[in-house]
Amino acid sequence: MYFIYNFLLITILIATSPFWVYKVFTKEKHRKGFIEKTGILPQHIKQAPSSGKRIHIHAVSVGEVNAVTPFIKELKKRHPDIRLILSTVTPTGYDVAHKRLPEVDHIIYFPFDLPWIVKRVINTIRPHIFILVETELWPNFLRQIRRAGAVSIIINGRISPRTLRGYTFIRPFMKRVLKNVDLFCMQSDEDARRIKSIGAPDNAIKITGNMKYDQKFIDVSGKDLMEKKGVFGIDKDDLVIIAGSTHKGEEEMILESYKKCTGGGEKIRLIIAPRHIERTGEIERLVKMQGLEVVRRTELNSSKMNTIPYNTVMIVDTIGELATLYSMADVVIIGGSFIPHGGQNPLEAIYYKRPVIFGQHMFNFQEITEEIIGNGAGVRVDNREDLARVLIELLNDPDMRKKMGEKGYQIIEKNRGAVERNLAIVEKYI
Image 1 (cartoon, rainbow, N blue to C red):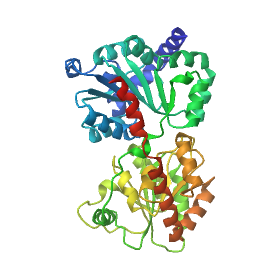
Image 2: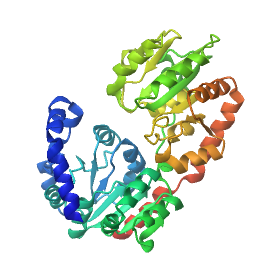
Image 3: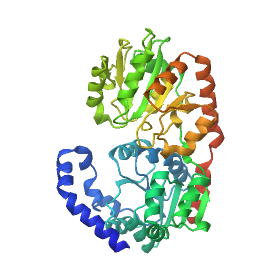
Image 4: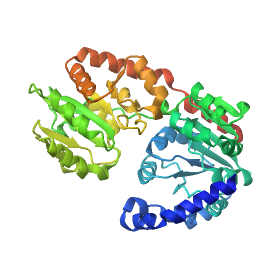
């Protein structure tokens, strides 16, 4: 089965190679880390001291990096002699890791899952423990980790319904892949059931909760909040809608809903923070097509109060700022949920006690979403008409917004503790 997998992988790679060569030469995000992805790691990793346990942690992108951050910080605090190597796939995940995790000894791009490439990387790193955050399963890498004699552990594991359907189709192969994993620390009972259904042995599965509840949220003081509002030209009586981590196909409906909210001349601000800031120009065109003005975050003067007309949509074209911007919001729209992407993390918004609105596609955060909706801290809408209606209701009812915000914050307080449970398991192998 591995022969078939590798044959298909190489065939697809050869067939699509002209496309990827073009991307590498024309797009910076595809050039970033390309050499490391081919298995050629910096010399300083090879020359690192061989004493002490070496732990390789893989977090595919920003969400996983954020989730594993408190785990890594506490692990290094308790065991300062271990060497930590963190790998990621995306440039944004790589950049966030560098900003948030000075405790990590080496940050690299994860290699392409080809046998000779992953073998070279593993022989360079020589990990004693490999920790996979959530569940991005790479067959050749996991197989080579087992052959190298390292312990392999999944933490904060989850399986979305869409992923489950794909894995079920190739269950015999996935069962062999999962044999290379020693422990599966899953977020919920449902995730445990799903990983078991595709071949994980029952005695290797543990339920440890979701570490995203344990992430270090940034408290914003009253003074800092006022300064942030000043930069965005927000007066004390203004109402603010923030659409966070939006994707292509979502901004148009958000803009239409915003216009319906402002029909009565209310002082309502809209801030859009796209998931991928390279889409800023595209969103600017959409805003202008709706007859609205637009300004980029990078065009605002950060050292003074800015004056911005009320028909102006603000686009956040910076990285790493969205989490604290939620503190300015009266209502938060969660991006990635109005298209079949799976949604984005709503926890930063509910930490600041803000009511949240989702679309129908929050399957990447299913357990969290169901708890938010079940506790009355958020609303799921079906279409753009529902989005406009719910926005108007919330903006016109400050008491409702306050109650929903309090309920959301209580969810975070109730669910903390997953980091400690995962640490207790990993420490048995250190």
